[in-house]
Amino acid sequence: MSVVFDPARLRAARQKTGLSQRAVAARLGRCGAAITQYETGTRMPSAAILISLAELYGVKVEELCSERGRPFRPPTCPRCGHTLKEKK
Image: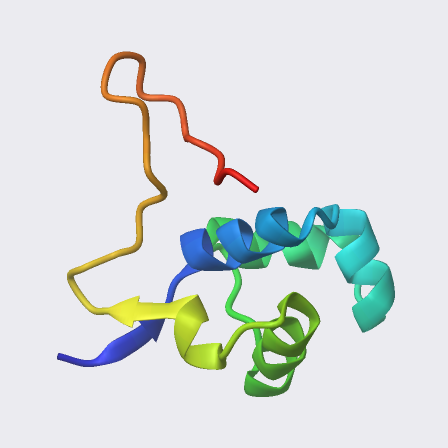
């Protein structure tokens, strides 16, 4: 299987750090819309941006990717379907 960039993992990594999209954009010198587009999958980040995002979030680039056909899905509540937050 090939490995591909996964927007859901990118969003989950940002949320885990507690950073807003605006804060990430400011640190990378990008506009907020670009971060939104990366996280929704409407725009692919360049390799350099992906590396910068991984460093900012304290993860490996591979953690922002998934195997084709097996996308990352954050855990959800079995009753209501809401995304569950990780306990700290």
